[in-house]
Image 1 (tube, rainbow, N blue to C red):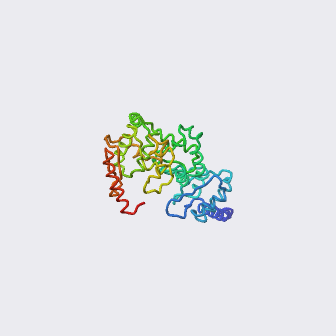
Image 2 (cartoon, rainbow, N blue to C red; image 1 turned 120 degrees about the vertical axis):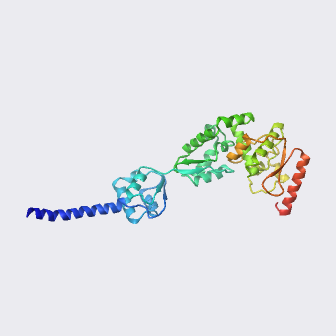
Image 3 (tube, one colour; image 1 turned 90 degrees about the vertical axis):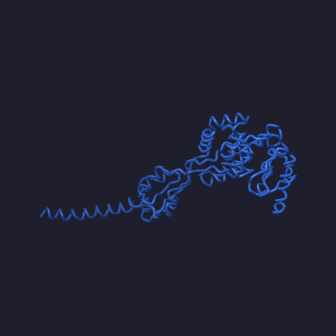
Length: 341
């Protein structure tokens, strides 16, 4: 009789436990995401638990979000919010999502340093990928004190950046990011590259400066070593570089399609028609192809070049000024025919 009564109580108890287990499994151990592909959630420094819930709402199923909020209340998540970029796979459970976000196990991203013409442009592109404010980036890149701590000045700081792709965390702070760029710069400038620069009588910063001009002269990587050889010839004989891209930079007008005589009078250290030698620093973040073009320039006797009249993006090279004038006349006529002013 007693055993029968025990069984009567045991069965409901087991059913209750099974029900609790099923509910717990449903809320905490089923897939968190309502999407079939990987989703990313970005948690900022000023986020609260409530704002995190709002961000998760677009990713989670309704019951998973309820489960997350329950875990957050019991484990004081509001006191332990960690910013970052969190990857939520389709199959990951609610409890694993909570552990990942609460413990700050974010996924790094692949950041490609863009070949930007100006530091504000670089800052804007970096802030679009990282949790960094563009105004903050511009501020340090225009601070001589900050740049000098890294071994540069505001004119040469662009040469710090090597446009490779790097694995970084979305919420890296500005100091860690800049130190990472120093590390990557030093790794790029191997002993071999430094020796090649030294044989040319140039520092790495000067190589980047010349490379930045060459990058603006042509997008044809195959021709860049030829152009590098021409500019190095000009430097060797003390001839002004007379590079049109430096005039555009001096004027801060990158929309110019033709450079006229009045443009050449701009009073700027970047105007290589008025000043002999290299400008104070790069006119953009130089490409790796441009840098290596300088280090591996083609040795020749050309002192002049002019864009080809077929608009192929390549150039006619000349040893004498008279030959150059003929090339320039053909190109000018081609511009006129196309109505390019």
